[in-house]
Length: 102
Image 1: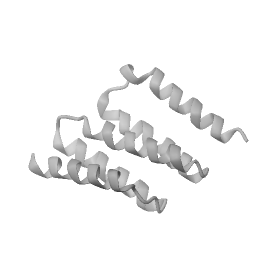
Image 2: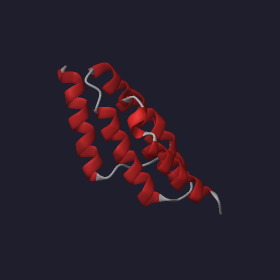
Image 3: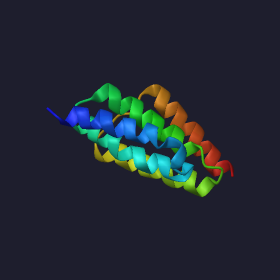
Image 4: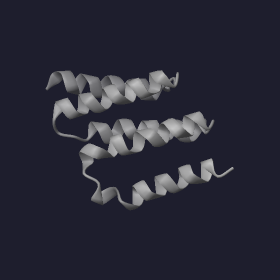
């Protein structure tokens, strides 16, 4: 099946263009890959990619874009019935706390 290979190639392309991609677009660029990995049953990869999406979305210095990225990631997870790991829940809470503190 070519789909898992395409997912690997998509992650490679993201990494290759990482420095060229403005930080405010990185979570948005990576989120569809996490969704695709989850749909393909690549659960471990999807968890790792969603964790990375959370981190990329938390980088922005402005609270509104961080909040937008967090909301979009949570919506994405909910639509797929993706259950974050306990560590991811902890990070989600930390990011949300920072959004609401600013």
